[in-house]
Each structure stands twice: as structure tokens, then as C-alpha cells.
Length: 219
Image 1 (tube, one colour):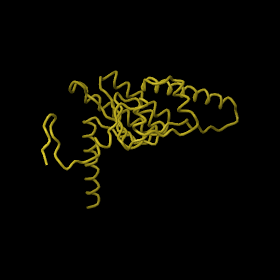
Image 2 (cartoon, rainbow, N blue to C red):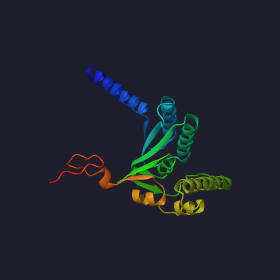
Image 3 (cartoon, one colour):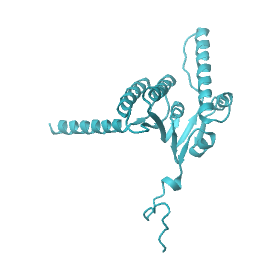
């Protein structure tokens, strides 16, 4: 009976935290699956309806710490981000809090403002397909789909980075190698809008911060 009561309390506390995150417009993205895409879409719709009209620049923040996943599910998440922006006038910012690999790196590009921490990394690589069967038409159809995705992703990276052409990005991403990028490399390539540097965000000062324009105390 005691264990049941404690479990109920833990569930209630978890739901309360989740409700508060929804009200604040915060979502944490990890593995990209069809089930996660459905949760993501429903959560963003609820957040956007709550944030619409609240202040001059309402925004949802998607925190990405993902090893990637399904290409189709990732594109579904991106479609919802763009829909939220169009229908509700709510900005969606993306933040990498550790790593964003494969489809996680692509979803990251959908943010109005893309932020990374000093320790965060991106990884881009070719999509892996598992196809079984003997009909050569099956392989031709999947090759057509793969080419379509490569074209879409190349165009996305060209538009978001403002650097290089879609063909350049397509060749870079689908080179056959895993492209691991530090936060500073992402900034230079135009894949991030802001990087929190080590000195700026991770060093803890023992002295209280001085307001801008106030001279520091002499030793």
C-alpha cells in the first residue's frame, strides 16, 4: 500500500513537471521514431495554442540530444515545426544540449534560432536503408526515394546555412563518411546561429557579476 502511494506521488510529480514544461514551451527530443513524432506533434500543437498571443514573441524551445532515427519521422517533426510557425505565429528555437546525429542534426536545422553549447556536436552521414527482396524494381524505387531525400536535405542545408550550394551540401553529407562537427565548426559552416563559448557559459566566477558600465572593484 505504501509502495503504491509512493508510485502515485511520483507519477503525479512527473505529470506536474511535464505540464509545467508544456506551459513554458519546452520539449526534449531524443530518439526519432514514429511514436516520438506523434508525441512531438501533439505536444507542439498544445504548446502553440497556449502560447499564441502571449507576449510579442512567443517561442517554443526544442532541446535536442539525439542519435537520430527514422527519416520519415524526422521530416514529420519538421513539418509540424513549420506548421506551428505559420498557423500560430509561434517561433520554434532548437538547442543541441549534447549531440545531434544523423536525422537529429537535420531536425535541428528547422529552428528559427539554432543554438549549441560548447560541448555539443553534430554528425552528418548517408542514410542507411534495409531492403529485402529480389525484384529489381524495389531497389529502383528505394534509390529514387533516397535521391529525393538527398535533394531535400541538400536544399535545406543550403538555405539554412547561406553557404555553398545544394549540390555542395549533398556531396558533403553523402560522401560515404561520418562528418563529425564541433559547435565552432557548425558556426563557421552556418549550421548554428549561436554557440555558448566555454568562457562565456561554463566558467564560474567567484566574484559577483558587475553591471555593464560599472568599474570593477580594485584589489
